[in-house]
Amino acid sequence: MRPKKTILCVDDNEQTLSIRKFFLETRGYRVLTAASSQEAIQIFSSSSVDLVLTDLGLPQMDGNALIGRLKEISHDVPMILVSDQVRAGERPHRADAFLGKGCCSSADLLERIRVMSARKRGPRKAGSSHLDCSIAQAS
Image (cartoon, rainbow, N blue to C red; front, side, top):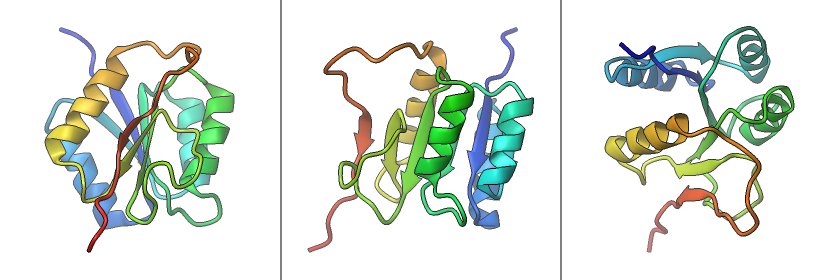
């Protein structure tokens, strides 16, 4: 039997974090949770993590800055940034993928996690693009 992939989920909203943890654990993942960037850095530094899923809107240090710090620790771990306020491409981010809250289905999220955690992260090739799921604009 293959060992379970470990996902570090970071969100300051305890309800969102709890739902995400339950959802991923029932799909066979081992889930570590952090409610702050500092807690996430401590967990990431002391645990074996296969993928990071973080919210953009975190207090003290936003999700983009957190990803920058985590990439300094281990650049080969894939990281997904989630936001309900920013659309993909509106501002630069260091994440390997960007997901808009409410625009991607649970199946889309699982597929992104599966694909990203299955491949080794190496240096980006010139011209490679991020996986993006933009928030649809309301008319």
